[in-house]
Amino acid sequence: MKTIKLFNVMMLTVALSSICSLTKAQEVEVSAGGDLVSSYLWRGIYCGGASIQPTASVALGGLSLTAWGSVGFEEFYTREFDFNLTYGVGGFSVGITDLWFFTGSEKYFKYDARETAHVFEATLGYDFGAASLSVNTVFSGNDYYKANGKRAYSTYIEAGVPFSLGGLDLKAELGLTPFESIYSDKLNVVNLGLSVGKEIRVTDSFAIPAFTKVVFNPYESQCYFIFGITL
Image (cartoon, rainbow, N blue to C red; front, top):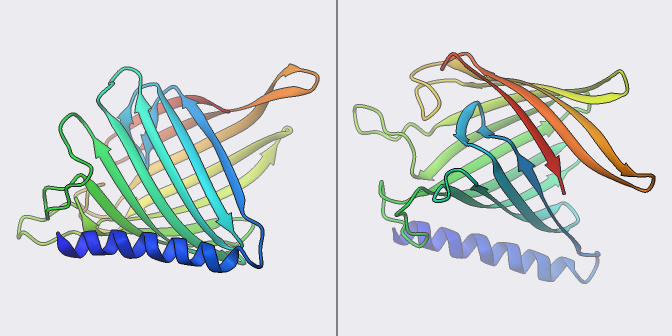
């Protein structure tokens, strides 16, 4: 418990100290927005119905700190609040994310081992331009535990390929887990997705970015069709 609390303090301290040191030489970039989606899917896992998902970030050079959340309309007590600290240079990026899930009784400042609703995850990624690859591993918090009582260190690997077709922006993605984890009971493909982005023109000078996405989870034998807009 003390270790995780210390980690949170260290994460915040590093972010703030880095921001303070970089502000002298670079301009701070601040952004805010959000998505409205018909269903909330995460790595092939259904996490809720229609949801609003706000986001805000501050960036300096290659360092960024982002807050992201999700609140479902149908399931009022299901919500998520995440913090992500990422550093990127060239196509390479490394990050740490604190994901917190609330389903009715979880307390945000509860970090007891195996009782916390926080999930702490490390990410390594590289964008090759024509494709991207990321590896995400849970290293602390509310992870999956195997029958022998050991932490699974749940890992999710995803490859994405953006492309254009018929004047539209598309992206194909494939996600898998290499071993028993929160995603599957063994090596399995858990996410096959294809998204299409397009602007919905409201007036000659104003358009709303929109997207549709088809998601298949071969492991769960499930499929989903999602629509969303970005504000």
